Image 1 (cartoon, rainbow, N blue to C red):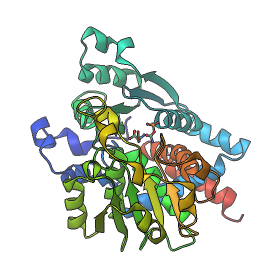
Image 2: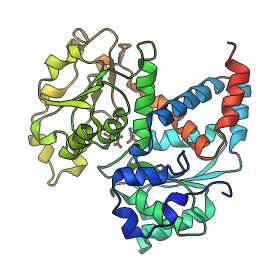
Image 3: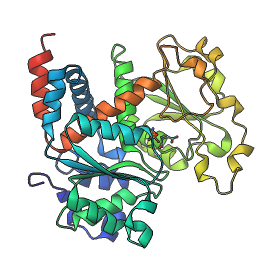
Length: 366
Ligand code: ASP
Ligand code: CP
């Protein structure tokens, strides 16, 4: 860990750190000009998004050949990663596993506190300190909002201040999902002048969906974008997100007319009802969501070069009959997660320049 550090956080007492604004926290976390801990979407400016996107593309191309995979697998073969996922996950967990494997990193995991000493009353703080004794990075998902921040601070006060990557925390943030969403948008619009000036519609459970919150923050990095938030009233986007967009000067509208907006937009970002957050069981079933589902008939009114995205998992908000349409990019979006996460980890451990050099040598003329 010698050349890596989190100088930004370690000088602060917890009450001082936790009381900082999101922007102040993000600035501290990026004090070195690049990420060590990855806790908040606000850590990433446009330049970092471009750099990570290019690195993800380099890794994606290099990984196509056996020789390339051998090279990538040698990059971090001396490192170990801990996956501490105490909230359910399929693709974030597996894409982080796959990203680590691509880079040669060995992995350990806790996915259920019933099988770890947390069930004996050990605190999360002590659990994470234990992980840091054995591993070089901790990738964590928790239903507790802000827990990843707390753990990063705890480790910053310890002898093994290893990086923490937030793989989804409560209702508040899912920063690496937002990175893969941006990468998917970059790739989708690469022949259409990129993400600038695009209209993006978010649909579904916007009140409790952390992916929408994190991606909305990242979209403020682009000029002239317009965001539409389309959901039944009880699931509409929070005032905090609207205030953040206003302050950033990003145009947005709260709307209820899903069908009417479809022909207007360049990207449709569908989301599932997050009923695990219902205050009483079945509360979400009382909300009429029938007007907010993407059906085959909508393909006819969409722009020919627009895309349909979804962080997944889905339920019935996108008909499976839509999957065959080339504009349905959610499976590619999911695979992009593996490349972006490999890019992020290689960057945290400072192997990015070497990967880019390899890419330059083997692909620049092709
Ligand atoms: N998988 C995403 C998340 O963990 C979206 C979802 O679960 O609906 O936030
Ligand atoms: N998109 C996402 O975070 O999926 P999982 O919940 O399956 O990890």
